[in-house]
Length: 600
Image (tube, rainbow, N blue to C red; front, top):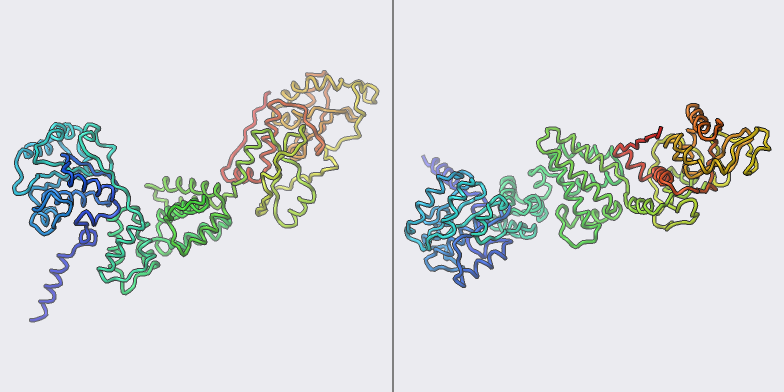
């Protein structure tokens, strides 16, 4: 018969249990964490007897708005008050602390949105408080009131009785009419820093006689997002699983989070362009219970910390602890700011697309795969700057090309000025960069000293303004050809004309074909002049202009000099830019296409 007593005691203890967030709710102004500016202002208003009739507390969830309202109500109605240090012992203070004082009416704005609720409030405003100094109305989530309710409250809010005070709290102050805002004294509650959250949680664990690793508390603090209540709720979950000492790995497993090392492994795989290893790591994270949304959020926060490190800022880190900081610094240094920013944008878009989408894992893998395809982008801004200044890539030396092929890499070309200028423009601005060789169609071998011809030319005639002494008969005058070269380029269309627009012929072959010398950058495009359909197109265009069906041979050489300053030449420079490995990577990654529009 003695056994039921412990059971009744246990049942009674279970029913009276309070969660950590309620048990450790602040009871005085000194207990509030992270809102020193609000505390200082309210202390002064009490000490100087400048207590207004309406206060508005704004801020995100769990930062202390309701706690502040109750503490301030105790400051005003305490038996020894008004005071900035309520006793917390009198009946009034104890009743206010649990939200049961008859003169402090707490109203949920979300469930009392209509005009009738406000009319009832107005009817009771004129009644004196039962036992306290002030009758206080605290309306939580006040932005949920309807427009009619706000309008019904305006007059009472502007000129309430001397014994009435209004406290409003909201997470969305922009939804409150300006007519209400202008009648309140507003206080903005800041998000609580991770350092202060960790300090508070450490104090709670000490009082609960629970040993928890500091890294586990940092994990909770970062997960809380500036909300003390969220942090205390997460700590409540951890305490129910604690047996002796709670480690960071256990905390992450309980909360379904990937470890810092796991997240860094993911980013390092992305930075190394190792998609196979990345996908394996994603699978391993999913197996241990990490949700796709949490994975994307973790990567995004880690990229933010990498951005801070890359910028050299002393700002606090959100995603990693001191143990992983050296790895993050190395990652930020090797990856570069441009790549980090591009990865952040990709992951931010991925996170937005995942809202309400059942294919969360697929989208997470897609976003991380796109990050893996990112190449170093630090040279891209320099390339664009040189395009705007009229630059074009210089030819790659045969020795450099051979060395790159032997080592399994390709070498980025340097940017030089237009061929006519023949001067190098800031050749050191874009450093040679090595990257893994990707399979591609074999390119035409470039020569510096031996020009490549497409198709193979016959021995050229001597340059002359009157080549009528040749065996081929009368040919148009070269000066006449140059004068009408722009018309000819317009006839053959942009696809062909872009190559030869700035390079009119300087001679004829013995078979009577015009010979144009173009830079090495056009080696691949020069091959299209040998296609039968283009040969006929060229002959037809030349016949319509010079009354003779002339052929055209294109010689690829490093000695080509441009004589044109037209838009066609600018277009040709854009085409040469497309041969840059960085641009090729972007085209492959975003599946970019260039559309050609022929004039005919």
